[in-house]
Amino acid sequence: MIKYFILFLAIISFNNIGAQDYLKVLGRKKYTLKADITRLKISFSDNAESISQKSKLIQNLDTENLNITIDTSTQNLVIIDIHKIDDFFKIKTICNNQNIYPSTYYIFQNENSEYQDNLAVQAIKNATAQASLLAKVMNKKIDRIVNIDDVVEKYLFYTEEYPESECMKKVLVWFNDYMNKNEDPDKTEYDTNSKTGLYAIWVTYKLK
Image (tube, rainbow, N blue to C red):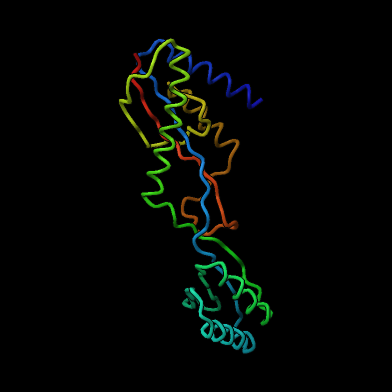
């Protein structure tokens, strides 16, 4: 059913652009990010045994040559940020030897400007490949790029579609909400050490 829904919208969109001298295409680039930091969270109680266990853990960690950051500012909680995978296994061994079983999370910090610029270049190449095919179907050729818009809106989940009306945009927003859970924009900790995404960018071409 989803396949027919997408095909229906794609046909409408193609009919809308068929007689134009300009072609607006959504370029996309899938990417996979690897976590930069592995975070361990360890909860302790207020009793003497647990406090002693916490102190011993910190002491054991301090004696190792580890590239880590230890946060003990929250009462009864130790947060360890690990920057090297080898250190992660060392710390897990230390914890296991003390019968401590931390919760593991992952932090992503590598979406810097240089990385995003490269995704944009790849997305534009993808858009150009799509535009060339569409232009050929329309018996035209690409003249030049006239506009690039990287403000990707929520309704661009299905990248084969080119919504021309506010009505179509609202339909796509509704369909996206229905099919997918929205991720918390303030979320910083993840349960897996990699995540995939789709970088999308609108590119408008002048045809000849």
